Every structure is written in structure tokens, then in C-alpha cells.
Image (cartoon, rainbow, N blue to C red; front, side, top):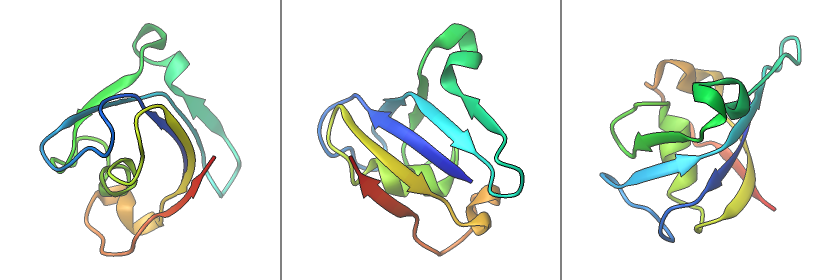
Length: 93
């Protein structure tokens, strides 16, 4: 799964902090796209880092971003279940 996220909380979040992101996700298999504008009335996603509320991949990626930064994140399939050890591929924009 590929996601574009924007961390708009304080710079360099850490475990236990809350992060709010807008996202767009595409699956590698069929290129189907989803985004935060289609969920929760277009609001960004709020989640607590390190609690696997979204995925381990997002936890790792968001902790490498500064407030307001955009990035493309490629999450290994192992992170779909929030139980992997492979690191996400993060490209800062």
C-alpha cells in the first residue's frame, strides 16, 4: 500500500503523541485509490503513535516527518497487520 501523509502536529512526533494526517492510499495490486476526504466528512485522521491505531508503517513514517511536511510512504505488505519488522520507504516532498 502506498500512502501520502501530512503530519500537522508539532515537529518530530514521538511514541505516545497524537498525530493528525491527511492521506491518499493506492494499492499496488489494482491501483485503487482512497483518501481522507472520503472518510469522516473529509477530516484528517487523528491517531496515537505507537499504539498501532492505523499501522506500524504510519507510526514509523510520521515520527520521521516535521509538522506540515508532505511525504510519499510505501508500506511493505507485512505492515497491513501492524506486525512487521520491515521499515517503510519514506520520500520527503
